Each structure stands twice: as structure tokens, then as C-alpha cells.
Length: 54
Image 1 (tube, rainbow, N blue to C red):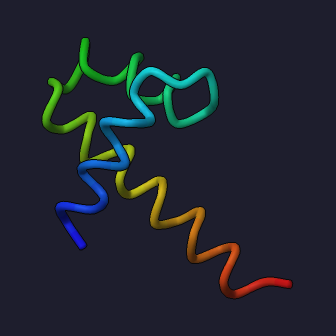
Image 2 (image 1 turned 30 degrees about the vertical axis):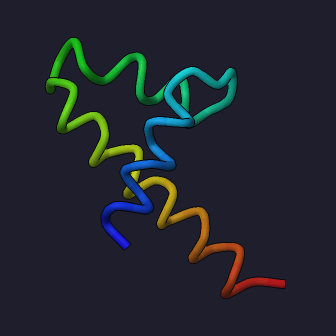
């Protein structure tokens, strides 16, 4: 699961949506590795929301 989220984070890095913007604004404060973790957690939150609500 970790490798899949990491790969998804790298693909979202250049996109023009919320996750891409989150990744681009985070590394200046926290570093690239931490930015990847933050985006992966955001993806998990989004997927949990979609699965638990209609």
C-alpha cells in the first residue's frame, strides 16, 4: 500500500488539482519526503470519504 501511495503521489505532483498544489507548496517548508507523506495521507482521507458516504 505504501508503494502504491508513493507512486500515486509522484503522479499527482505535476497535476493541476488540489493534490498537485498541495505537493508543490509543501516541500519549501517540510521537505520533499514529508510532502509525499502529506499528499498520500490526503489521498487516504479522500478515498475513505468516498467509501463511507454515498
